[in-house]
Length: 111
Length: 120
Image (tube, rainbow over all chains, first blue to last red; front, side, top):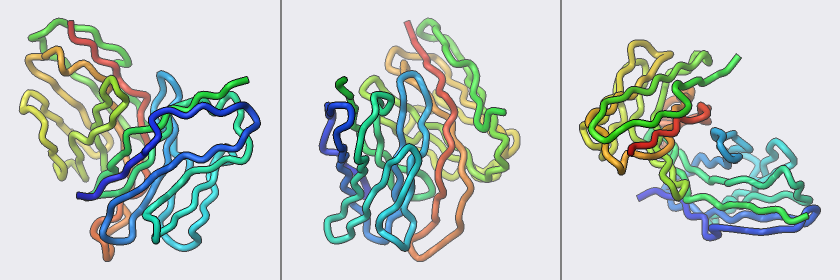
């Protein structure tokens, strides 16, 4: 079945450090891939999406992600993390006219 | 002007009661969804409607009944509430991108702020 896996449940980084959140997908065809962020008590906000074309996609808040078909990955990166980036991050794939989400990665930012 | 709004934001009720959550979107999207987020933050699709027609109905107890009076509204009614129904319920909407080589192409989802249901 089509799915996404986020191997890291919880990540802690220092403010100003770089960040990479991992996402692996299982999908037979070319996937539509998304990264969402959820701040405490809030809904989900789209950070970026990949449909086709350039495999490096830029998103909001300084985030980017790279689609690697050979590795079935769509990892999220940010060169310098800010304290306000502390949140839950979800990778998702479009499956059967809906999005299937990974289990999420909680990002904690240390001062 | 909120794109996807759902009410109420918080709902505390007793086991066995019936409750409803309402959702409205002003984005002109064709498709609306209900997702359930459990205490471990796992998000699971429950239902999806496209132009008032039910297109996704996951393995959900039939105590849950969605209703879409028009394509801008999707409500969720829950009968005989159980402790395990406690969760955050998210409404979302999207604009379908048509049928491609890999099947239907779902555009990005726009989410409401969630309705936290607590069953005592």
